[in-house]
Length: 226
Image 1 (cartoon, rainbow, N blue to C red):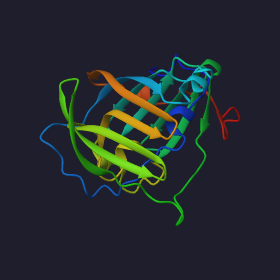
Image 2 (cartoon, rainbow, N blue to C red; image 1 turned 120 degrees about the vertical axis):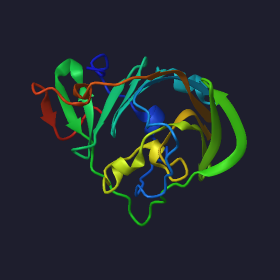
Image 3 (spheres, one colour; image 1 turned 90 degrees about the vertical axis):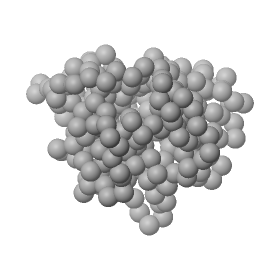
Image 4 (cartoon, rainbow, N blue to C red; image 1 turned 45 degrees about the horizontal axis):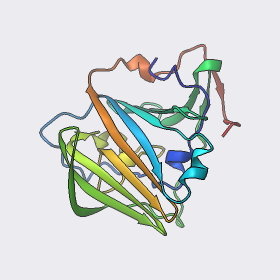
């Protein structure tokens, strides 16, 4: 399985405070290439005034993302608390996988409330070439935190998969990104900057079984380790 090598869960680096999107599946104009299927490898760099103290916690240094027709896996590893997060489109549920102990956890249920602001990315003028792909720049600001996304029109997930799938929370679903998978993300707070950069694109057909939980894994409702 794609996520077997990752065991314990440590997700604060890339999920705490980051805006995750929801989408109604109606605003995306597909480019002339099929949606991305395969794997994207990323490196993670931490800089800023608090970077030294942050490094003492052995933060995650690498991330892999795997995509297949609406299913996706996010793997965070090379740190003190790696994790594998699996979204299965047909179930409309998110799972945390503890492969070493043959168990999995359902993600805590959450829905946006009236007090929440669903993020909208605003296009900026900067462009970059990342792994040979021309990327436009999009920005989301929330209080003192700014997150910048670099996306290519050619590397995307078809958001029509997620229409009427309210449990899907993914960065590529932020309105403005409209399904485009960030190849680079810069998250800035006053004291810390986290930069996630794609280092390799591996387009290829993936086996659906890589996105399914083995029958001998035991289900738990809550991951008490998080």
